[in-house]
Picture 1 (cartoon, helix red, strand yellow):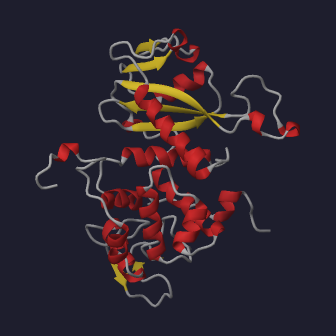
Picture 2 (picture 1 turned 135 degrees about the vertical axis):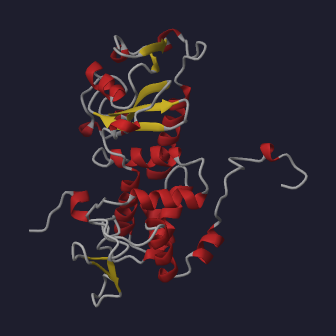
Picture 3 (picture 1 turned 180 degrees about the vertical axis):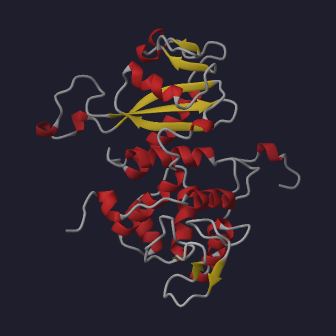
Length: 325
């Protein structure tokens, strides 16, 4: 950027990205990827993922577990207690998949992952959902993580159009929202962080519970004029009246959270084409998680995903609801 104003550079010029060539050089094999996973998961030294004991025996005789905790006497590896546990995929594949999901703003389909990583489509689908678990902050998220505000709150509908279905499969529901799933979202203006989740409906108690679980009492809440937000207690509520064409009134607007919906729907229509309601929350977690990490360098984004994997598992049988007899 010598001789040019860096502020006029495209995109988030201040971030340090990572090209695909650099990625391959950094992770040429499983051994290099394993060293990186160890460094991200235990930057201050190896400890047991179950009990946290640092008294660890290394180079055990176990065929897949190189460490043994002398406290709880359990064997473990860098995969233990993460979605990578019991996976037959090499750690190079895991590192590359994390990179691809972090750097594609509209997501990465399982068909594309299957071709790029030389795995089956079913394996790629399971792999992507396991990585999405790293962005799962829980629903509701931890109480101490509530936003100070001001916040913008809005809801959107996800799903296909009934008119595009075969006549025999159309739901007998009026309006353009028939058969769709409701997703509620909140954006904190101070941090630009977003929280979102699938909710059962747009009833007042549902939307106001969503707000109470994510914003501290006393915060200013900007919404549209939907009736579900009326009589919102414990908050300073400023709605904008979309029904009469009012979209901005001073600081009152919901354009920030609406831009999040725009990205989610571009991923839905352009990348995934269909998001099953059974797995929609994971896709929502993916887009909110990636949004919240966009200010970070690419390697830091990947590190956050690795740290978010701790304590999370997602077996294929749990994902599909099919248990072996």
